[in-house]
Amino acid sequence: MRINIKVHARSKRESVTPQPDGSYKVEVKAPPVDGAANAAICELIADYFHVHKRDVSVVMGSTNNKKVIEILGK
Image (cartoon, rainbow, N blue to C red; front, side, top):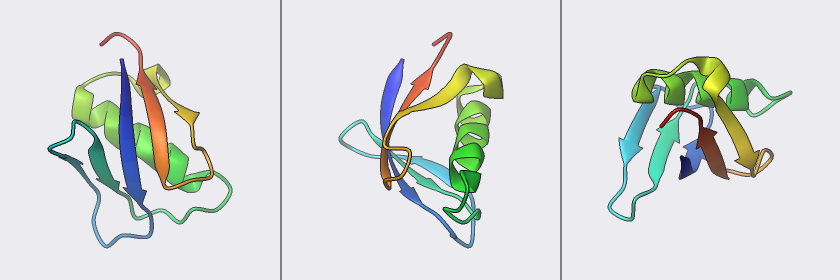
């Protein structure tokens, strides 16, 4: 399954919020430096969808705030 997300890095909280258009808003505390935010996003999405972290990956937009995430097993 692939989902579209919009990321807000360096947020005060960490959350995943479904949007009306089918995408998700993801807030992470990690800064967008050296892939720290992407790693935090993968962890948060894995927890949200109840899958292993290794089953979540950033497919497109690794340096952008709009990303496509692939979740294996869903």
